Image 1 (cartoon, rainbow, N blue to C red):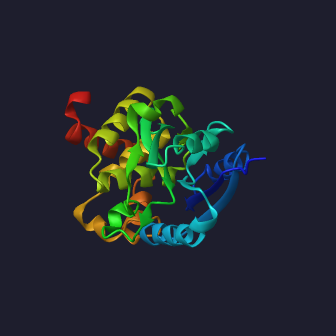
Image 2 (image 1 turned 90 degrees about the vertical axis):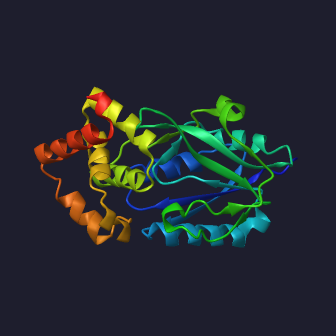
Length: 248
């Protein structure tokens, strides 16, 4: 009998509403052996470095590393086995598969897998702590893995704080096209979660760069200042007018 593939799944968690469902979906995976390593309530940069170290420590006893954040829920119980199949070619060292994102109401890149050939080092840029993988030979993404999309839900049922952080973080990273899609979806649905995400983006100022995590003083202050619904909606509309005037 052939041994089942051994998958190391790494999850960063910081109060995401989908965390329990995320864990259950990972536990339900078929035709693989899963080690699920969770890092809770740590600043983003430090959490990523802790995850890279955990993978480096366990790489020798696993075949593949898949990063599944706490706001991500696999859609089918064969998702990890489907990812394993992509790595039958020994030249494949990485894969990036599209997920169905609540905020943009669209497919986004985000679920990443890595072979044991990949080397992780601490990122030199704290805002891009997840950009730490080196030593790639062939990374599969785009059309070649589209048959697996969507592989997961992203941000399926976000809390207000979680949604605010999504927008705050995307604006910090200057992901203007992502936020444009959020704005289009919010103008269509006028839902609270996307409104909070855009409010988070609207709250980013130059002085915010001193604190990016949930516990950062500027983040908490900005979030609490927009609890009033009318004030928050006004900030969102002002942000859309300023950034995407053609939408309104």
